[in-house]
Length: 232
Image 1 (spheres, one colour):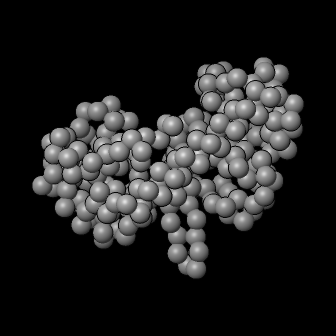
Image 2 (cartoon, one colour):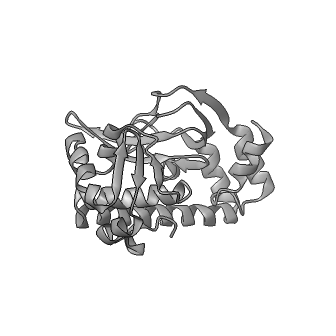
Image 3 (cartoon, helix red, strand yellow):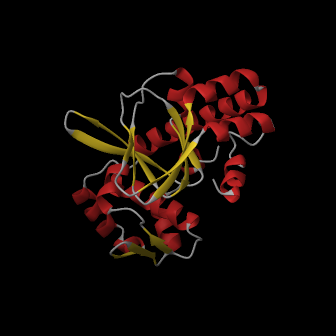
């Protein structure tokens, strides 16, 4: 693993405060692998053998039932997923696949559980990580239940614009079908929602979205710290 990757992984909230020997042991036990786009890394209902850390690329979390499939979220560098399943030594509740060429560090689940028992700082960080995941889940439920599909899209665009530098130009970075699934919509409803946002300053040009009137879009979206702030 490149030194710069190790440095970035060390900055993760999960590893920031743990002892050097704990971090070194976990990283040494891990496997860093490269994957092309479209590779399924884990399947729901499989045993949780590893904690996954996305070092490079983009991973989609998804789930299926009765012939239907939905996107649950995305993991970007540097980010972890499937921590709860690892700690409880239970099966995965969701699947994961690469959307881009990716590098992923896999740390054996048994090593993570052992480190938690011997490093109180690491255990505290795990509690904090799980708490953040729970709060983000509540915010996502509120987003899905309290907003229309067009409102969800408007707020997604505002967040994406902020993450991409605030220029008013948003690169989707994912297929519109995947975005529709992430927002709890059909592709057809997503197209109608994009059209409905036209009068609110949104101009669509393939995968590039221009927010021509930021204030008009904000007035329509009505972003809320209690829903859209995914950092607390």
